[in-house]
Image 1 (cartoon, rainbow, N blue to C red):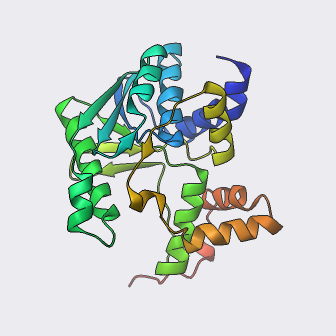
Image 2: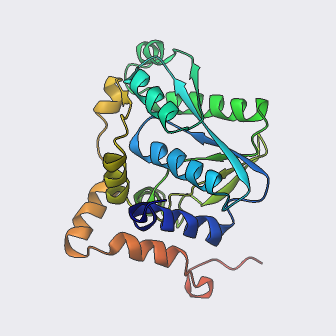
Length: 243
């Protein structure tokens, strides 16, 4: 492994794995690969770790081709050239879904995609699914819960999907988007594009805009939120005592 890889993303990936015990001996991990930068780097990083025998596990990626993905042949060629095990599941539902739900089919599309990934994991004996959520995703989810729901919560690094019994893990939670963008550029990953008009026209969330505003004045804000979420003093919150 090259030094820049360790410094740019692998150190943070290993920190997440070891802090939250994300990988256990004998794990068979499926990476949900959208073809974007985050999930692509996750598959690359976990494949590196698997080959280096740092942890005892196997890994493969799954991309759900919903019928509106561009640059797929180039992406598959990159994976083959770098020995990245990936399977493409073809189920072209996206265009029909956009006709049936002309205002916003994104929620239903996401649910369908996740269902396909879980089904594939069960059918092929994967006990864990890895998602490419990053440090920014954790902070944004936290602020969205505060602003919209009045609660303190975010996406956990490890969670059990009770319906399938599969453990969900997020090894990129300490890696920021700038590092991922730089790594993908250096590796020259030919990212796939989601050609759906809803994907290209998504409006930035209130939380994302707020983070950008705050970091204009406090550049370490996201790092401090991550630190705070690891350092919660439960006895100094406004919890209601159960009787």
